[in-house]
Image (cartoon, rainbow, N blue to C red; front, top):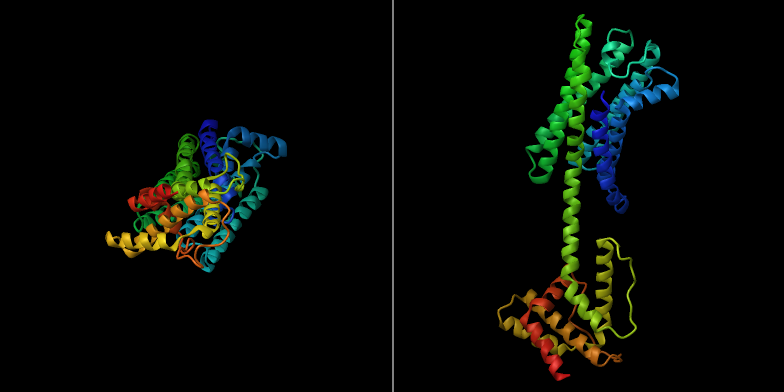
Length: 390
């Protein structure tokens, strides 16, 4: 196997792993994300192991000619199993049924890996072959069975995965379908790798020399397939976290008018919890929401029920739906209360016993109030009136 054909996909897979590692650190409970990161790491190690310098180093350090071969085949078997398990988890989630399927798959492919190493011990592979191990030992007892076993196991995994992806892609759309298409194409290339290897081995059994199929055609097919498979698993996660990040960014921006109003009207000397300049957006959003809740609670002594009732009546008279009218009234009362606190920061007794404002009654209430502060002419009029009356 040529160095470049193995090291390039290894670098791409490690790069994808490093790309997802920060998300895994932030979301350690995400089983699917952890599984994808584990698969990317395993596949990167697999292709690093397949590079000729790595194979030679393993043989040299161990002192056992061709020890790298069963290690590579065992790693290939493990990656095949991991792909099947991950696809099952991706489609059906973590359930008792998928746990049983994962255990059965691990048991089956674990047995294959153990058998590969047992066959290597029983066989005689004393001549180091770094590039053509499969064809050179295609007729050697026990080593012959080792080669056929690993190729058949990988072929079964490739066929099952490709069919799995094709069937599932017909039931989904968008990014998941694109991811499945990439994985399916990658495994079709893997199937080409297996076919080329099996053809070269079969030719040796027939007394023919088709070694170039195994040494020159098969490795590039595997090298092309690896980034496609890795990209297929990463793409839906990237889309999901990009969507989560976009929603968090929009929420953070939309809460801006409310956060700024409360900050301007805050008493001198008040402070919020400091976070670093490069803090994640999620942490900034949590800090902003907490500060808004604290600010709304701090304004309670200044809430004027008359402002709320007047704004509500005017909004309804303009034809606003009741829910929208209540949001406008809440925003108007907050704006007036903020101005009142700025003018009279020492008030401690509320104007009324209770306020109709319920800032935590729903997950989007704060965003609606903040947008009303920025975009409602009625709220702007109430605020201007408060300024003129001051």
